[in-house]
Image 1 (tube, rainbow, N blue to C red):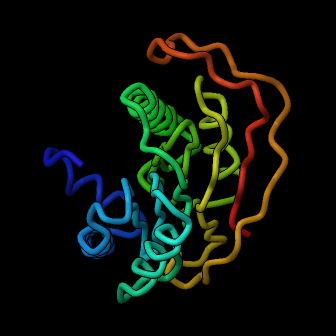
Image 2 (spheres, rainbow, N blue to C red; image 1 turned 90 degrees about the vertical axis):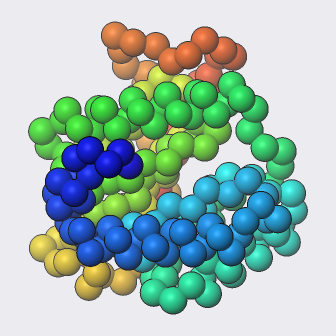
Length: 209
């Protein structure tokens, strides 16, 4: 996060400045413990809920990384999306960065979505959303926007719907697969970086109850 405007951005989030600080501290602690010995792993934290993405060399290391994250004080839930396999190529990293930027831009400019309550992580074309939504229609809108960004292979949502409750008062639950909307990508004024064509496979959307 850039320093300019950072305080205003954090204050606009439901978790507030204190919640953001706690999440950053937790993220730093987990990332330090994981280091590089468990693979190329990215840690994302929103209000005590931890998302692990990236790659590792074995199922054992993937499980160990999850256990390390779970052992950090204050962690409410861990979502282990680590892939067992080789690290991303330079082109894949460039594509993922472009997708994250595009999804963030689409959320920011949509009046029906409070974009500050969503954190976006993209790994190998999979877009992971974590955060909180004010309502189910808002979450549906956010996942739809991510769904139709060119190059996205699937959208996985670990966003909690508040239904009038503070997010911190809602217990985390298991993900449930939801059928994706029919059709292909929507026409867009811009295009992803040049490279291999993306798959036309249906995009899966997972949501917290």
